[in-house]
Image 1: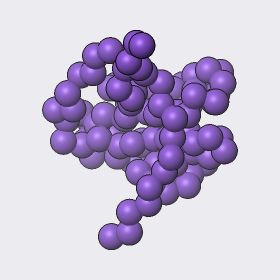
Image 2: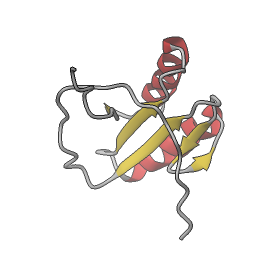
Image 3: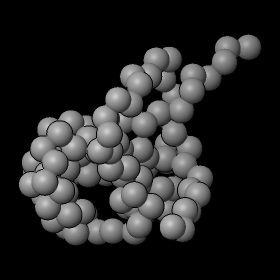
Image 4: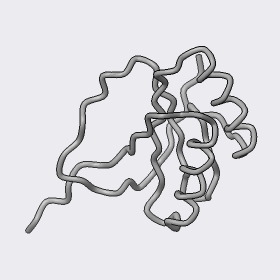
Length: 102
């Protein structure tokens, strides 16, 4: 299996919920505004179709969304809407570690 590393500047948060789900799909909006699903480039229409197929097999599927800080909130909200329309009930957000105060 080929693994691709992406550089995404994530938003920061002070607390994170541990990932206990076994079936997690990672969606990434990178700095170039490209959408990736588990590391593969995808359109939002194809993402919706694939998520619908996955939900039919695994109702407890979790989608973990991460977006570079340069991505406008509206574009993130649009992807969130498509995820919800696909039938996904559990949407998580990937964030980076908190910024240390000087």
